[in-house]
Image (tube, rainbow, N blue to C red; front, side, top):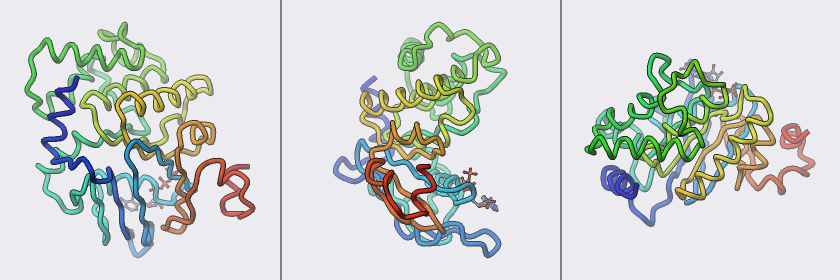
Length: 258
Ligand SMILES: Nc1ncnc2c1ncn2[C@@H]1O[C@H](COP(=O)(O)OP(=O)(O)OP(=O)(O)O)[C@@H](O)[C@H]1O
């Protein structure tokens, strides 16, 4: 599937030596209420950064700013050196071939089979490939999540965990270089949740992706985070590895590890 990497890089103008994602001095308010208040974050190549924060801290707002669903009031967001704030719809579409997004709900189309769900991003982005190549890519994506046998099934026939894995396969089908995970294990039983953690690591290693992961699930955080960024009062309050932060005596940090 080398071809898709090439398509993706060329389309977005990825510059090899640029950092995947650099967020600087981001501000976002709603009705005078500051949600992001001078928030900055750098995502290194092949790194998983977990953004930790209380409910309502602004984690989803942050992710929405990165993928252009919300426009920040101030600040810059650069993806491989390319400014994404205020870009047009066409360029935003191109950006979305480089950034994969796993929604909190799986957002699979219920009326479409697994195959059709996986085909969707390929059709949407007008990737020029043959039917055979489409088929290979679908099977390859399903292979990654060990669900090749579900290719002709409907989402309703699958468990919540399987649907999450199919959603992840769909996110990966365009071979994004950056993946944004919004609560990837929420609503899953512990065993299935740990399978998702392992998949996140497997895909990071296999495709050399860089990811932002939003999670409250401290098992997920411990397994997947190379670095944790604590979002508090709209700012990066602190950052560090799980091991660095778990024994902190700072009450604002401690509450997440209890
Ligand atoms: N489009 C919007 N219009 C107005 N307020 C919004 C909008 N989007 C988010 N907010 C507000 O911004 C705040 C942060 O929301 P956000 O969804 O980012 O929180 P979160 O950290 O992801 O929380 P959770 O962990 O509960 O999902 C909330 O108070 C929310 O009501």
